[in-house]
Length: 54
Image 1 (spheres, rainbow, N blue to C red):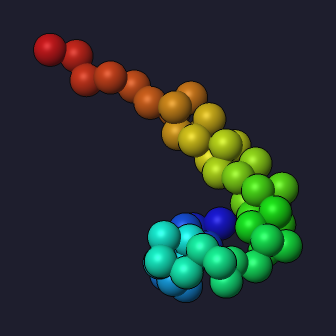
Image 2: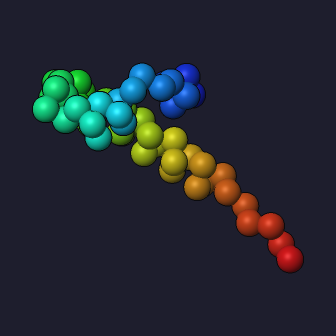
């Protein structure tokens, strides 16, 4: 998971600058596969968060 978060494959640039050439199958795959993984990661981070006491 961490490696996929660190990769820079130009997805943002493609979506912003070349939207007519976006592979919708890849976008859908990201929505179905990667976003749920990110949700779990964020839930874990939030669940482990302990605020500093003043």
